[in-house]
Length: 88
Image 1 (cartoon, rainbow, N blue to C red):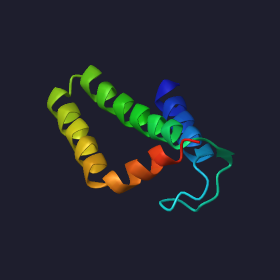
Image 2: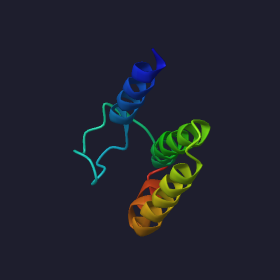
Image 3: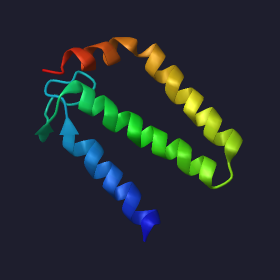
Image 4: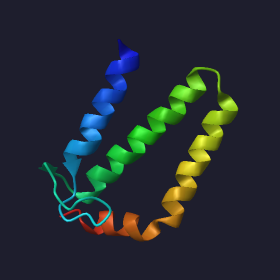
């Protein structure tokens, strides 16, 4: 049940809560949220994924995944800064 329910719930949350006029998305926001909330949703989703890999015994894979996420956010620092500025 969780194997289907958690990914579906994550996909619904990911697609529903957005920052209006986000250039990395369609620009539409079904439920508009501040940028830091969206950033938190993204970090929680990827963090949960890394934890789930670790919890299943895939320690190396979880560390690689977490490192890729960190590198991704470092490379896309301009989007992270934009999200933080959209916190009003």
